[in-house]
Length: 308
Image (cartoon, rainbow, N blue to C red; front, side, top):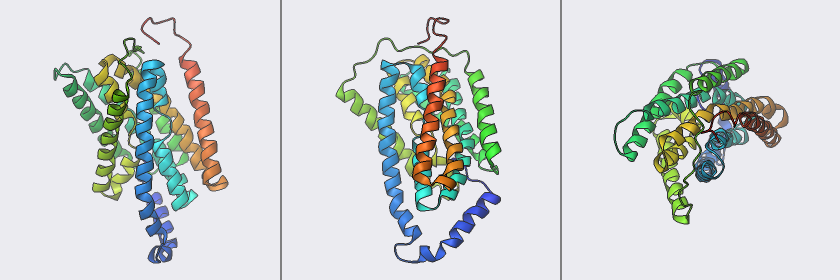
């Protein structure tokens, strides 16, 4: 869940908690089960995200930065969170949370664009300093956007309309960025892959630990943080050039459309079909979206020599 609503959404949460108070008080009750599940959720998300970061970095090198950028929007961490919410609390609770996840993608796009703009600065001179500065710029934009979005009362119409409009906006803002292909690839040794996995794991642990320190209100925002995108872009930015990182960020808004589709499908099908069937159908629709976007974006290859 990317943002936490107020008003009707909080009332919904309160009703769920009242319904389960007796279960919570009993040994092995709902809250006990959730406490046991929380470390499992963090572990699953961390392992999935580390694997995804390494895979995306390899795809950016071997296939194209455009394809890797689009694929980075595929629902992973947020999907795992929604699945556990539906399994441990209720499908209805997860369905409501999915609407907030969709709106919260605006903050993810703010992160991507701010990282891009900050990385254009000519200081500091070293690669590490520039990657750190760009990451901080992206994090600041994400935090500001999320702090505004968490105040919204979200309904299905808003959950589709708002992220879609911002996807179109950020696609336009990135329109002058070229899909620069990585031509002189670094050697993909076991050491290189392990270093990337270690960096991704460190970033993920830092993010999830911060989420636990800031309390429940902001934890919802961190739950769908671009946990894969940040280490992925930082790795490519550090290993190659800013142009390659920009090419990835350019395609992030297009890829995030799959998460909008996934969130809407969860909101629609979890209450009626249940969590397992709803998850399968949501992933099928999100995958179909990515296939269509990839085919559509691959058409004008001859127009620009630097494009993949």
